[in-house]
Length: 317
Image: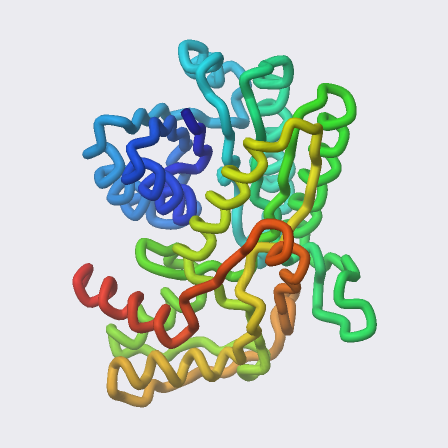
């Protein structure tokens, strides 16, 4: 049995669906907050609830007492994938305390609830590529964080290290790189571009288009999480790791815009802005160690990913 926190979220939905289709029992929890239109979360849940091997429990991890709703499953859960939390780099600039409560306090409550349970083989949790700050060629693994969001994710890594030491709990922190795909978050760039082009609106381009990202298709994320779980379940030793999960090829933002324009067969009007506070100019996933140890694979290139997103988007509209 696997527990997925944030199961109504973008990655949580896809991961839950992946295991449900493998006939695994999935317990999904989510607080269904309104950071973005909650209808997206409701729609994802409707799909998951069609599966008999899925159980959904509405839990707000900021309320430690709400975790008691998991009591009857507590001794049956083998793996936890913690994907719940407050997203958004720019949002963290104007609402910093939200990240203390939703990301840090909530995570501690989760760990306190499970800390003495020997049946828990591993806890995989969502960290972020934002902890690296901007890519530095001289020191690509530098961690010059420039947002409260990034700091909150780095804090989860430190907390996990402490609980690994104190309670022999096993952790893998997953530093995700710009995930996109069907049923995605409407506040993310690719989704916003599609929405605005479909509605014949201008699209906002920040830093005058001089951004590059390791855009990573969601199915690649999910399949690599599964590789982590399968391999770590065989590990009899205590472990606490931080790994990168992202497509190793960094793509210039304007190349993505061009691909989307081709799908819609039209040029879109663009509104250019300077670099925004907290924004990172370039991310690039270094996954050499992960490929060697966990056999990570990234099958979907950016063109295939945009094609897939376009097909889903057209069906949704």
